[in-house]
Image (cartoon, rainbow, N blue to C red):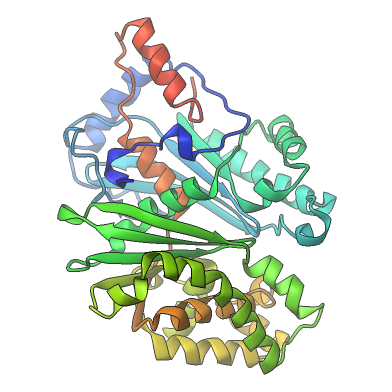
Length: 413
């Protein structure tokens, strides 16, 4: 699967629920066309806020002319087991500029491992967070959006009812995507951080209810192709619930047991793709995208608070990661809470993230790791912006065909 050959993604790898498409308004598009001509007269405007950040488009589809006028405002929501995240962005000449963002820990998957259902408290917290997202989307006049839900909603038996409640109370429609689509979007969102000279990359995303690992082949011109992926059933939420047993701190034996539990799920992936053999040739880059990885990077850099520009793209050596992970794990809950880059909301979950990270490092004797503060949301935005919108004078039949292909993308009048 070559990531540069797909826009939003093939239907066969996207398990979608509650899909909705609205026909675009040509008059509004004409207004965006004239406005964006002014915006693109320079490579980047100077109207950025503290939350803005520029994402390069090294993944860009070569079939789309670079001088094509890009219009509209785009939004992407990633609703995971632990977090609810939003990005709102506008296209630029060589990528996009984030104009608004939101992230909140909602713990949607709390108790899911035992009950198999989303709890009322978790759903209430999530709906409140999504109301804030909906307000930002409305105020930013978003014209194209894709909003997805991952592991917690895939597993829960009451996810359909929950998605209907979200639509009723917020107006937002979320699609439940497959693990394969989740992996593809994660790679698409952070592949520009794969350094030149690498033949392969192992991208991993430690989530709340699962961890995705993607084995990527690096092609010419830094294009990428997914050769394989796996989703293991452990993330920071369910692994914490299974092993902590309500205790704020864990013993060294428990820590090692958590590492071993994750490791046994990595073995089949190693046996299938023989990643260790490729690692020996030193042509593999490991790229981690998750709250655990970015948190450890901020601690490693001794930041007084989380600073994205310093964390995103940073490199860490494996011995430093292992030492720091064990130090964090041996801290008391209060000590972790007092760390400005951890805080009380992550104090109990970061330990499980460290065990997952240590299992990955140990499985493949990873020499170093690059940190990515980007992932699914950025992948969604890039996919949307690579899409060619139907010509304004296109024949109805041609438009209907494209509408069926992209019926999990919402165009707003």
